[in-house]
Length: 442
Ligand code: ACO
Image (cartoon, rainbow, N blue to C red):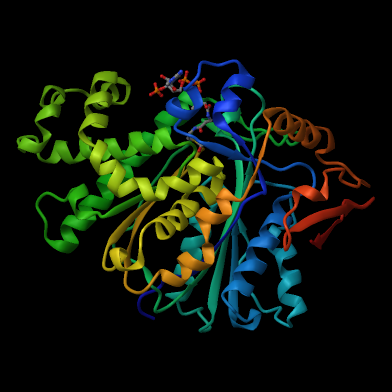
């Protein structure tokens, strides 16, 4: 099969969000810390009425309905998530209720987990399946979703929640480029979830940022080396890329990663006039380059216009929602498709960087080979984001408290108000005395 890639996309995010400037006041930090320092505008949240399965049910059902896809045409369903509610039973098996109702129980694929990387792993499984001898000719669906929650403290303003569901198949408008995929993996304790009694991670924030940037450098260099070979280029660079989508824990880190790309380009082309501002850093060691604030400032200055053009459209939705762990990078792709017209996107190359702590990272690129207009209009992202309810930080804090108090609860009816659930959205009706979960659609 040719032109394997993304045929359709749907995104689910909660009805309620808090405004980051109000969070700054509520948390008693200096004005601008979350909005400028982290680069975030709003943060989506949920209470005990929703869980990973309910939000994924909503995303899949809406994808199928909005794009008029028949459940029997799906041969594979992959879920990437790090929101674990059961140590054995996969979220995918719960999503099978939708398929079973429609008479399709022959659906391969299961959950994949490693921090924010699971969605990318799910996506590559789906693409690999279609390109393999196991493929039965049907479509695949990839679901990447998480509740990104942090204990109160420095990391809490980088919370969020969301799911992206994608239809994957041949002859797609957003095509995966072959032969360029690069990967970097290692063992690191930057962010992990060893405490089964809590939804919150253990996180070394600063270290996780460095891990993210190091993995970016490594993937970018490998990607560029492959591009150079494939396209016979001496000095491949960001000039070969039209748009960039990075996993977005918060927008500022994405901005810094994009800036880093130019540092890597510079090291391959140190005498190029366009990198004159970086010349003083030519001899700097790699370890120093990760810490040096003068270099960071020079890179951010050099890449300011490029960031607005190449990254800005993908950064929009994640800035409005917050981190979505596995979904964040795909939300970036949905954002790009929503913010840029289909005509403008034609034949453009989109680089995508996925990072999951612990750590696993990969980089791929897409080429736009068909109209993205239908994906954009059905996502209807701007309008849906603007229609959300702005809640007070106190409500967010009490929703987090509610989740803490009911985490792992058995024989329990959620108390979160159904007023906070939009029409067409699945919610948790009850959890019975055997921890079995029951869902309803509003
Ligand atoms: N106005 C403008 N900027 C400000 C202000 C202000 N009033 N106050 C602070 N800032 C800037 C700081 O200078 C800093 O900028 P810099 O990063 O360019 O140096 C930035 O805002 C953040 O401020 P810090 O004091 O460094 O923030 P803090 O240490 O409290 O927390 C952190 C930031 C570490 C990112 C925290 O939110 C966190 O742990 N997040 C979760 C981990 C994470 O997302 N890691 C990313 C990769 S792994 C993953 O995806 C989970």
